[in-house]
Length: 507
Image (cartoon, rainbow, N blue to C red):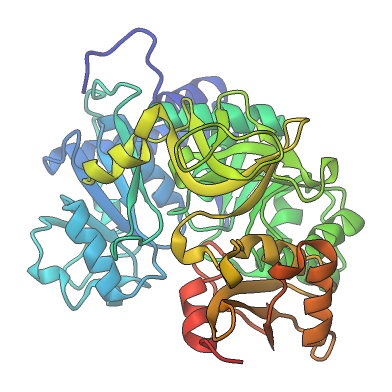
C-alpha cells in the first residue's frame, strides 16, 4: 500500500459515509431483518476486528464460497476496511474447479456455507488455509461460525489507498483455472458513480440482489445502490415467485438480469397478478422478445451495454428502446476504441477489437503478470471482444475474438455472435449457440443449436432463410437443430463448450 492521501476514497469510505449521511435508513434487507446504514457500518467494523484478531492483514486473501447473504456484504466491507482482498468463488463450480481457484488464491481464510461445504470437504484439509469459517449458521465440519468473529472494539482503519486491490473476480477459464480480475477500490468507486449517473440512483432506490454476489453485476450494483443511499434486498438464491413478492413488498426499483431471470420473473408476476409497479430499471442481457414483454407489461426500462469483470461492469450503456440492437455509447469515465490485429484504429462501421482505457479498467489478472502485460499492450485493455461503431457513437457487439470462436467457411470469416444475434430476433427463440463443424466442401460449416420452448415453431430451413435475409448468405447455418434447453453458465450466458460437447459436429 502507498502512503494515504487526503484525496483517497475507498469502498469502506462509502460504507462509513452511508452510516453518517443516511443513518437509520434501510441499507440491507434480508427476510425479516433490516440493517440500517449505521448498523451496517457497525457490523463491518466489528467483523474487521475479528479478522485483525486472527492476524489477517492487508494484502491477504479471503476466499468466499457461499450463496448470497447480508454477511457476504459485511465481509466485503470488513475486507475493504483493512485492505484485505476478497476473493469470491462461483458456487456452481465443481469441487476440483474450486480447488484450482483456491490453489491460485492462496488464501489465509476460507469462508463457505452449508450448501458449499461438500465442494471443499474432500480436499481442503490438505491445504495450507489456516482459518475456515461458515458464513452463516453454527459451523461444523472444521468450520467455525463467522458470527463469532464480530467483536469490539473496532481496530484502526488500515491505510488503504484507492489503487489497492479490493476484490478478485473470476472470469473465463481460459487457462483451465479461471483468471482473476483484480478490481481496486478506485475501480469500484468509479463504477458506482457511473451507475449512479446512468440510472439516476437516489436513496429512494432499492436493488434486488438475485444474481450471485461473486458476480461483478450483483456486487457492483449492490455497492452502487448503497453508495447512492438506496437499499439492497438480498436473496440467497433466485426464485421467481419469491422475487415478485419481495419486489412488491419492498418496492424494489432495480433488478440485474441474465436469462432466464427476467422471463421467469415476468411469468411469476403474471401468475401472481402483479404489474411490478415499483420496478423502473432492469439491466443486463436478454432476448428481444423478453425485453419487449417487460416494456409491455411494466413501467420499467431495460438497460443493456458492453462490459466485463475486467472493466468493473459497463463501459457502454443505453436503454434498449433508444437504439434496439446496439450496446450503447461509452460512459463518461471510459475511452473506448476499436482496433485491428495491429492495434490500428478501424474506421466507423468496421468491426474491430474493443479496447478500453480509464478508471474502470482493472489492475490486472491475479498472479498472472504475463497475461496482464499482453492484455494491456500499447496502453489499452484489450477485451478480446469485437464490436462496430456507428457514426452516432453507438457500439454494436459483434463477437468474441479468440480463433476458436471464428468460423471459416470457404475462407470467409464468420463470427458466431453475429449469427446468434440474428437468430435471437426470431419469435419464440430464447437462446442460440452457433459454432463451426468440419465440412468436406467448404472446410468448415456453420451449425446452430436453437433454444425454443415452442416445439415445431420453426423449421431448420426457416432459420437458414431468416439469417440469409438479414446478413451475408455465407453466414447462414448449414445445420440447425432445436432444443428446449441450452446449457448455461453461472452468469446465465450459454456454455458453448457444453453445447458443443452435447450436440457435436454432425447434424
